[in-house]
Length: 363
Ligand code: MRU
Image 1: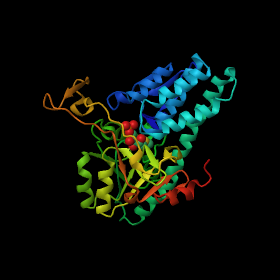
Image 2: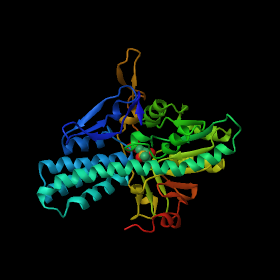
Image 3: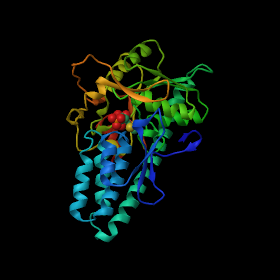
Image 4: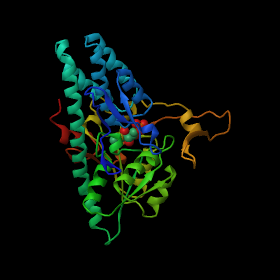
């Protein structure tokens, strides 16, 4: 997608052909800065500190982290240590484990001297596959938006509500929840997106609004608690969110607050869709409540970064001194609240039967 007229992806190889460049998401929306990852530890830190974030992108970064590790030491021991270390940086999004498994599969049985080239080839392919997968999610999601648009009066936009950032910044390109929106907008359908600010890290206000704005998609940032009110007043046609892990029974784990949006959507008879690539499905779990939920630092709740009038970015405290804070980063929306899963293979019911229908040929 484009930023100031220049096409970007979120991760790419540097001019030296081996180091890895990323967009540093901790600096957005105030500054567009890229960062160079030259070691496996750089990749691990980028994932942990959320310089890169969003389920598909942390998988892609971990894949390149394995490449960087193997450049230094291509032994079995180094490979296993790198995979274990990268995997533990964020516990909830299953794409991280999926990508590392793919990398292990690609290099494990090769002689040491062939491992680095094979790893870079697999990581590059994984990124290309993510782009195509997200594009196809958009193709299938577009049909849902077209159906809503067909029921609208001329000139009335389709109002989508989304939570967190499941946009191209969270993937390699296109995004999951945003891919149908971009494709509808590019086709000339009038779109408007309600962007949940997504406390505590404000991925909606800082990232989703940033990328929608850069692409020219009309949008409005709302506080996380506004969604129910907007739905009650007929201002939301459809909710589309991304996900960090969908279990085999169709339960959806996503950024904290998603569950409340699903409840409000159900109460107001508004369709609630979840967009995801196959790499987000955890076939080993059949109950969303078994997913480990990341607990993050209380600082994310008690402090807030922002830009001053002179352009400098500072972090301020927003709570009474001495108060503690809890910070569960994700919640689980039970499958019964989900209208459908938008995947690269089509839209299915959020259930074992629905997922089996689309992915019956899985390994
Ligand atoms: O903690 P984050 O910012 O990595 O959480 C990201 C989300 O919850 C996204 O909605 C999810 O990863 C889907 S990204 C296509």
